[in-house]
Length: 171
Image 1 (cartoon, rainbow, N blue to C red):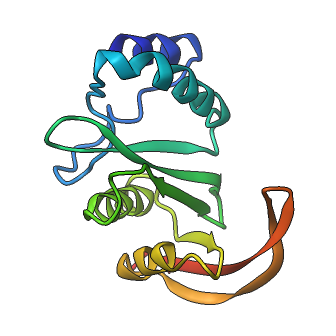
Image 2 (tube, rainbow, N blue to C red):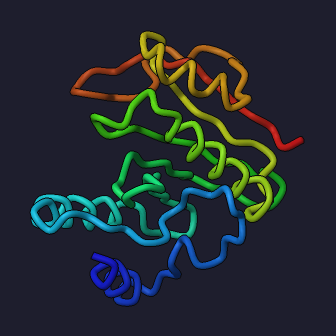
């Protein structure tokens, strides 16, 4: 699997997202180890996700279990704008079987720390559907504050959905 990731990044002229972190708490991808039986299902979907995450304004991260390297979830910074704005949007989700174990909180905190220290962002924003109590609790536990409400903000499942705006500023 690691060879596939190296090949994809090399072919697409991208640097590996885990190469430049010296943060001992980061749960960024270091070595993705998947059981051989799952690789045939996971690799095409993961490579498709990587393709969507290409571009200088997008920073994708995987949250991996420390004990076995299994991918527990995804955190991404997108629409990153530098210059005077220095802001980006945060997206995240956990894979089934890995929720409510503190893995996403640790991963989210590591990515936010990366956004503020390495990327030197001033603001990170997460837009969350009002009924998603777990996601709201996760954002709140990571220091995000509710800033407002955006009706019909994103089209999900063929319908425009309302979202709450949550943000965290660099301290």
